[in-house]
Length: 184
Image (cartoon, rainbow, N blue to C red):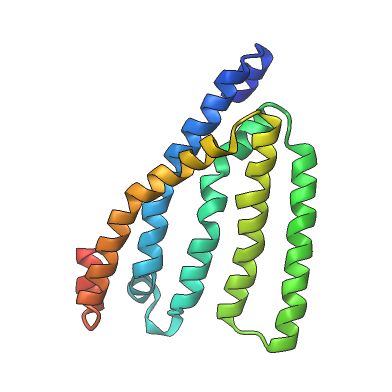
């Protein structure tokens, strides 16, 4: 609604500011949560469902693959609010279907397993929603790519300290997963 209201009054600079601010906050909230799942997702799954369901590669690939999808959510909402979502939605769908189809053919050739399926799902999501849509939005909303990348990179760099501390905790308590999870 805010993006639509901004569009209705032709305040383009405010729309750009909304995109950059919401992307920065989205990244600041999402990166630590997904890095926690990458590092301790298997331990969470052990607590939740038991050892039989743990597949760290699957959890990590889906978490990493959804990082850009989730952090780019605000830009999609702004595109919807300013009515620039139709063409990019169709193009993104086509791109994802092409990449997914190529990946499916590749997996048919080398063999299927859950790890590879997680990666197959993550790659088109990352390219389509995490790269293609932001590039389109920056062009259509007259946002400098450097400024947009700064809105993503700064909170990511801030979250790296948290991620490093999680990794140190994980490796320090490798044999005692539950203790590592609680400390993490």
